[in-house]
Image (cartoon, rainbow, N blue to C red; front, side, top):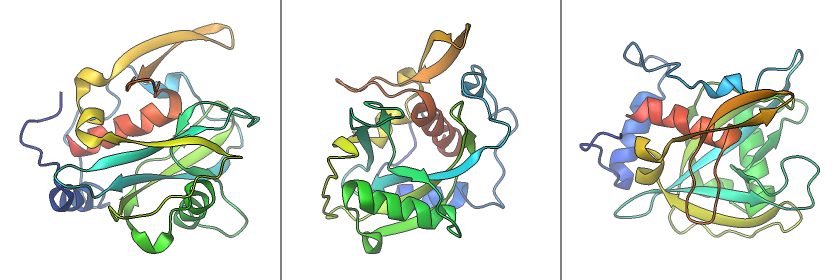
Length: 208
């Protein structure tokens, strides 16, 4: 489970993220690859397409939250799933630029209210994308405007809930003829799983 000494106030989480997302910081041995590895469910394609998501941590007091979206039901891929704002990179874009652009297009998040801190390791999906998660602190007063053609709903989850290992369930289902295991983090009526849950798990590994 998450360590009891983690302070979830905005300033404390921002400081911890800056330390743990610094490329010079090294995690203790054994933190990486704890079973089940979600990459056994979603594997890299031969020629993955670059994509990025924004992991928006809202600086709520006394405890920060994470902004997630439910994808619109009419989308061709991953419709109705819980996701971070994001999408594929346009020509010449960096992961940060794409993450900020997609967050603005999907939920109206103003880039001026977003303070990027760093990136997590890339995540490869079975649908052929190489996703770079960009972690950022978002001003608590940030105004959202939902793009209904892409997003059905935006909601917040306390970071303490997502970093509590007791909420990291292991589920399985048949996919491409084989039984696959993956992380799931049900929150109320929302079923967080797949790439989104795997990215949250990696954030947990960095911050725990």
